[in-house]
Image (cartoon, one colour):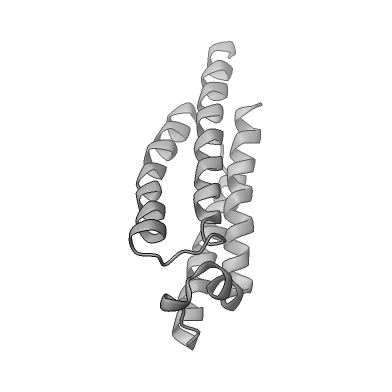
Length: 128
């Protein structure tokens, strides 16, 4: 896998999940948040849509920039606290449903892709 492919696949995670949050925030709230924490007020839907728009922005930037090996490594390290978030808000304070744990699946996918992208970028740099 090339570094560019890994980067595009990372972007895809942001674009898919971010698009869902932006264009169907009520659906995300209904499916991803447990009943005890679910709220369907305008402000909650607006906040979810804002979260989605930021994810889309990052996904689009990931499509139009070229990441170095260092960028992949930094991204991988910066993903690590999100695993704590997923654990805490699924097991300790049960906010996220099993569908809400798509966030965890996306984080695992992106971490693997970041490692593969880092390796590929290093190999590409050595060939250049």
